[in-house]
Image: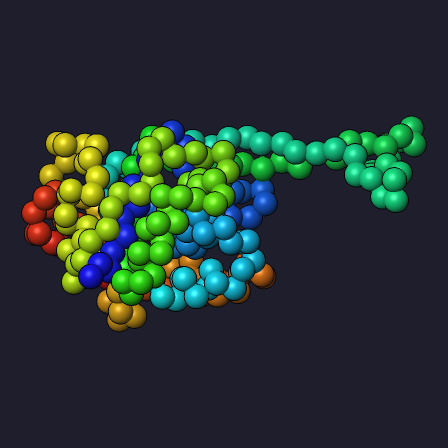
Length: 232
């Protein structure tokens, strides 16, 4: 029996929006659950409004190990153009009565050269289905935004572990990019009284609404099951 699916997320650029608004498209320091479930949805061929995304979010528990934190980059981004209404151009008129090109400005945040090991735990039948889908994705897999293409295959194996922490302590499912790193930071789902809320649990895919889940940050010794609580 297996209960754990491992995903290795490495790329030149990653972006895990948590509180993104149009002008400021932020990134969290680690992959968010909503984005990872979205990645799984791509592999399964689901539309981003499909109600099954909520079902997956409810049935899976997630942990993240930071193998390489990466650095942050902010991209100044502009979009714009004349819109068509009933086949005729529309927009803002300038002083001469000409249609003025509208430009939207946004700042898009990225993680550069980061690497994470993600583990998803759930029922054996579901994990087997997802493991096959990730290796044979229907839609292209990306890490937060479509421009963020993985540099290595995302599938990193399956296994049977009693909990998320034990799974993340097993080094065989990733390459540990920083071999001199004595400990690695991990973010795991936990009971409500054990950690802090983060609003990345998919609740209503159609309206892009998210519910809270509780997470805890811990430190594990690389290759050793020594665990020290940092927050919670």
